[in-house]
Length: 320
Image (cartoon, rainbow, N blue to C red):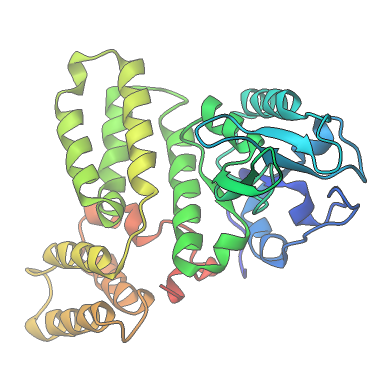
């Protein structure tokens, strides 16, 4: 990245992804993307739940064991009498309760503690049986269900990478603009500037939360905040695609139709259509649209986080 943000956003990360030698075999899984790119805008909180649970380095590898529909146990691969389940759940609960300032967590794929999904669960007879989430992740989600989570390996997918970082920055907006001085007005202002970002990820969710806020003043503020944030982060976790981005781009173009001439309007429409058909990436029509919004747009439309949901130096929309 060529520029530093005004403040770094606190994000948790599995310690092995930063080069810390904390894996069961004394090794690591260093992620150059996290260290060379994301560390410029994220302040990483390193954590290894297995070390925190007292398992040591090196250590007996563990795996999830159980039957479908049951809470799997984290047992020793060689010594099934070694059971780290309760320790890992306790470590995860304590970490989540003590680190409420985090805006997200980057996890190690496939780990029986840190795996976000599709972690192998073995039948007691030793055969692969089903799949589940890691126990540390289970505890994180139970304490803070809105915390954005993503596996480092899944961020090789440009759409998943952008989705996670969008959620981290949106959650940071909430934590810095709504939580310090909670009010109905602060929630509505947040929703107002996040409107088109939300629309790009889940159109029905955008409509749902708009209707909800219209009647929210009759409800206790704490309940409104909890309900709104839970639903907002849930809808934002849905992947935006060319169809939904195109819909938002056309909505934004509508705010300029009286301010720009027909040639400029046609240029924008052509760029959006090229994106819709898959000939160019999102950055192409968006850069053109932002140019005209900066010159002719209203304060309301210029404030939309959809236009700049994360630092442009990350280049996330160059690949979707």
